[in-house]
Length: 498
Image 1 (cartoon, rainbow, N blue to C red):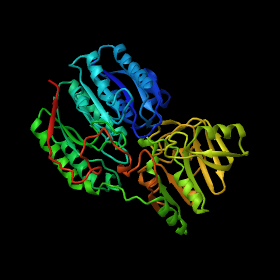
Image 2 (image 1 turned 180 degrees about the horizontal axis):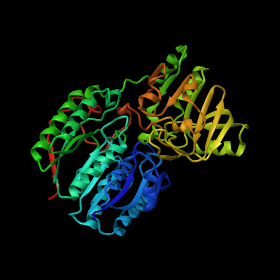
Image 3 (image 1 turned 120 degrees about the vertical axis):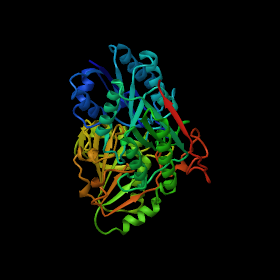
Image 4 (image 1 turned 90 degrees about the vertical axis):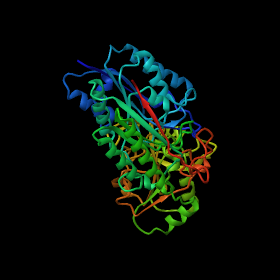
């Protein structure tokens, strides 16, 4: 009876966010708790479990899960060391296994280690030995390092953005692992580095030019000798030495095919990369546009403060500009400000209070904004995501009403790539004239299908699509769009485990 170990270590950070992430920013689960939780959500481990549990001959060994309940800044040294120790202890404590499935993100970084995923894989190899197959699933915003490929047998990546294939990615990873365990395939991987950091609507895989590269990868993966393929566009805000775009193809012992397909995908991507930028509107232009809007809901996309990309969540830049402009439309927005929440809890529902909002986590970018508000709702901040049922924890949370502004204030940042933070706190975006969305892209039905206009705002923030404003110091140079006239000479690197 083959034994399969399952473990998870997953977070996406912005190294430009000065507020360090901590251990408390993770949901930690071990053993049967890991299985029980992931059976309730349609994420990667949920998909893998569906495959493993459908095969009665498979024995599942649940290990350790550290899953970010919020993205954030670089992971603090002590937090990383504790998570790494607990992760590896679960590997040591496992009975002998025949294969390993690891669920990771790929854009994690700590003060002590800029390639945490690669480090964990290398240390796992020391524990389990060189012969045990390891398959890793990753976000396409991951940064796939050589060390990650050297110490795993194969990687599998999302094929969609906005991401809707978490579950399916886990299924693909599990099926591939079982083929390797059975001795039916011998993976070989080709990786091509592409000197580009990209953003924008062209990355929407259903409609944008990036989708061409993904569909080429899907064809390569379903080739009779194909096992896995995709494109890692990285998280441009995780400034680490390996940050850039990568195409990759995994085949069954056919290095020539893997190289050829990976090069074709990379070439297609490069042909389109110039289009993969965001036309941003200044805060002043945003204010003029919204004052001229007469009907419908305007969505103000403040992706510079996208907590799902690792930003701090405490930006008040859009709120400040709307106040300065005298905007009177009913407006809904999120912000992270633990002191303001504490003040709201002390005052109680229905009370009026004077407080400041913003600038508590990234004070160099945002200065606190003084407001008078009424406390409309208080909660413990525990809720499930609208998209796939993950559990989020924004900590103590308050809904404040300041004249025409309704502000959902959390103590901790949570992912905002859907509407669940608003819904969980009694707010329906359709009921407002303007809604601030702190995510570069949500699934189309959430906002784009029904709003009257979407304005992508060039606001300050540690996840700004204005990449030149951030100050990258670690990623390879030259690189698009940070540098002009970037050359691209496609070369493939091969990885295999004998």
